[in-house]
Amino acid sequence: MKALNIIFCLLTSALARPALAQGVEDFYRGKIISIYIGTGEGAGALTAYPQAIAEIMPRYIPGHPTIILRNMPGAGGFKAAMFLQSVAPQDGTAWGFITRGFVRAPLLKSIGADFDPVKFQWIGSPSREPTVATVWSEATEVRSLKDAMTTEVVYGATSLGTDTGLFPLVMNKLLGTRFKVVPGYKSSTEVDLAMQRGEAQGKIWTWGSLKSGRSLEWLQQGKVRILAQIGLEKASDLPDVPLALDAATTVEDRQVMELIFSPVAMGYPSFMGPGVPQARVLALREAFARTMHDPDFVAIAAKQNLALDPLSGDELDRLVRRLYGMPAAVVQRAREIAPPS
Image 1 (tube, rainbow, N blue to C red):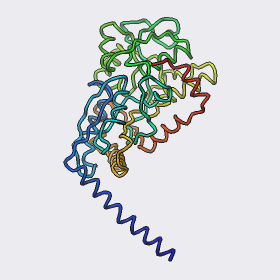
Image 2: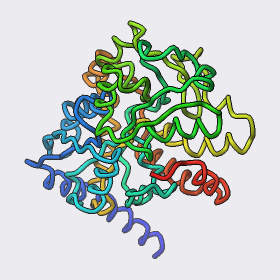
Image 3: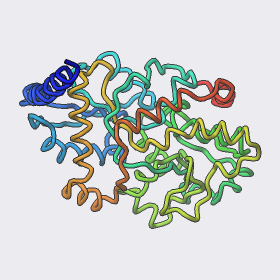
Image 4: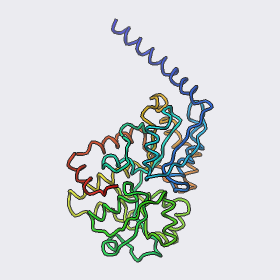
């Protein structure tokens, strides 16, 4: 009898899988999936990756829906995160790509971070890479992290709770740098314009964004110079640029920086809301994984100098849960170090 029960369960499971797949296909046929990008248009890799994904990934999603991009700037991605959690349809047609720093914001009790990353359903990330602290060469003589410890550098930022504002202020408190952060820009693109106008002298970039599009020309021409890498480990193609973590002078300072910098390991994380049916989440995860190895997608990425070192939805979920499982003492210290935002 026990053997018969096992056989029955296996047969039921085998029959259920095609039914689930058919259900996903029926749902997505003729549908539009909107990718909500939590910043303004032209935000380097944060826009370039979704554009390439939108072109290739529909071929791998059951029902072959159309994917379109929608920009939703505001509060460094908080607006888009709250929209995807509470307002967007929870049916698998709303998908978020937001600057990774938003993942840390509720843990640090950032003002306006009224969402819960642990509840999001993570789809995948096209690449993991560090963030870099830079200067606009014409605006300052600072050329290293050590220089920034003696000379003030004005940094443009979207908000104090995102990487663009938080990272330089944390380095001020733990490393002794003298970054003057000016928040309030609607997007990273606006910060670029501010640097060109002489309004700002530097900016925090993701490495992938800096080495793609127009900013790659600035880097090659020496208009933008890198002071340090911010993350848990160095990028393979930046071996000579120092890691900010290595400038910490105490074990506790390093641990706090590791907590605050840990979302960098997520690269360009993407997710759907907490109410999306599991079958559709799994279908999107599988389609995303297949897209990352599609020859056409790989060619697009290479043409745009976009790094490919993907993470799965499961990997992103584990990183988020690890972050939110940090020891209370380390979290409290990080909250004290991070500025109110």
